[in-house]
Length: 220
Image (cartoon, rainbow, N blue to C red; front, side):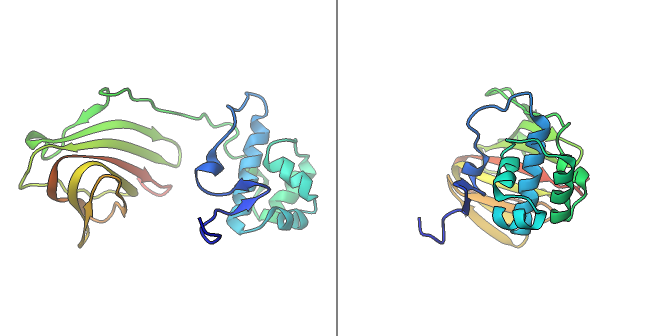
């Protein structure tokens, strides 16, 4: 990987990609507030493009202290919280976001997903709901789609949010708006759900792909 392709690293921790989301072990029950503050401070700092050093200067605290705060290794005083909020130009309450929010997960054993009846189901188009998460500001749904027979009528879809298709098996041409994308195993397509989309041609059967739809804050 070239220098241009490497992820930004600060204090040895990548800020983006899978490595940035890894944890060494499950978080203990104690320290929930510290972890919430750590997460929000890091997120807001990264959103402003500030380094740890720059942020520390702006907040009037040491770089070492800020590093400890972002790693949930210390408890902040009210004065420090006020300084951080002012430096980030956010309300102090924004730094506590998520501290009292339950974290959900949905596990769907193989073959246990709910089968969704869609137009085309009778001709070998099978849609299985793998799970959905709903929160106060977001929603995500995942489907495993299997196409086993040719059809002259393909379902078309249009919905709020963003959709990710990941091809698992077979080959097809998938349309979005005026464009068509030839997809093979390993191919991924991200699209704006407001654009009319759906299969255009089934090139190699059977076809299986994962469909994940994420709805944003303003979506119904």
